[in-house]
Amino acid sequence: MTQDIYQNLTQLGGATRLPESPEQAELERVPNPQADVAYMVRFTAPEFTSLCPITGQPDFAHLMIDYVPGPWLVESKSLKLFLGSFRNHGAFHEDCTVSIARRLVDFLEPQWLRIGGYWYPRGGIPIDVFWQSGPVPAGVWVPDQGVPPYRGRG
Image (cartoon, rainbow, N blue to C red; front, side):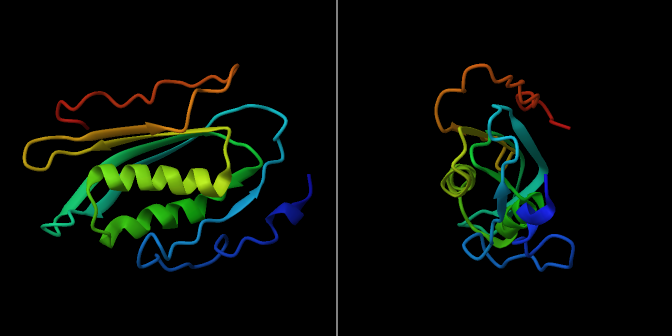
């Protein structure tokens, strides 16, 4: 494998400011050098934050993003910056979770993607949001996300 698949990355390897909003965040991708193999990739974001669109109070979640790559891999620093751009973004839990998944599906064209948004309680009620793009491809091992139902998560 040659390094030229990484030549168009602009955020990796240097200081990069957190985008002001998810719309301004620039996801980056590289060609999948193992595109002939069906395998799963997991990203865990245990400190995801966004804002309540009504009160402006912070909301916190543990996000689990699983995907079976197609032609592209997401560059992880760009994903981190994209997720961080929600810090000042006001949206309900459901909107944040599904918006993240849909943007990744549109950008990466994966064989399959799922997201689990395990949101911490606000007003005494935790809200967990789950979405996936379709059935799991045959032959791919997909482990449980491992986040238990809320009981004082920690």
